[in-house]
Image (cartoon, rainbow, N blue to C red; front, side):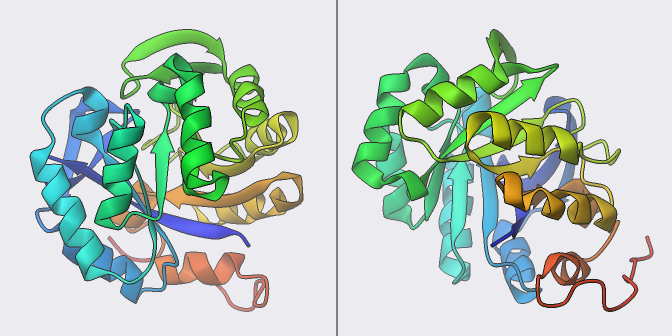
Length: 257
């Protein structure tokens, strides 16, 4: 099943969006993350994608922890969560709060045996690999550090250790509303044998249609942030446009704004 994940990025306990992961580009969209989560659930989301930006940047994140708790108490749908999960203990705490899937990136690159341990303890379906790349190379620690590691090679390494799900972000496109490179995402899925959730640059319903065409190659979903928050299209239209049982039955509605 192809899944759309509305994104909720937390910073200082608020819902924000960044452009290309730059902290100075922050735009605040809400002081009430739980209300945003309820909105996406009400509009039909089957999953949420939640990121602790403060944790990813290595900053204090108590406000984000409280926001996460409030979100999980407010919704019934599952949520995947990442940002600053540097050890198995932190993952266990996230699961104890009610998270359905954890996302690891820096940890997997710096301590691959711990990533393997997490899969063994929690199961491959509950641990997703974050591969955040620019020009084909992985970046870590909130996209602030270059690793000089080839993204596809890293994906294959992690697949060999038992990880099966990956969130692949094209940093250069993230938050830019310039469109997602669906062909590159499909190539990545084929090259690594990972089940890819694509992220970075979704700007239109056509992007979603193109990604959905890559489902046979291993693209299983997409994360949408800026396009929803800036009303490029509605979540309802996005869900309709990629639903297998209702392909292209009506003209999409675009929001004004």
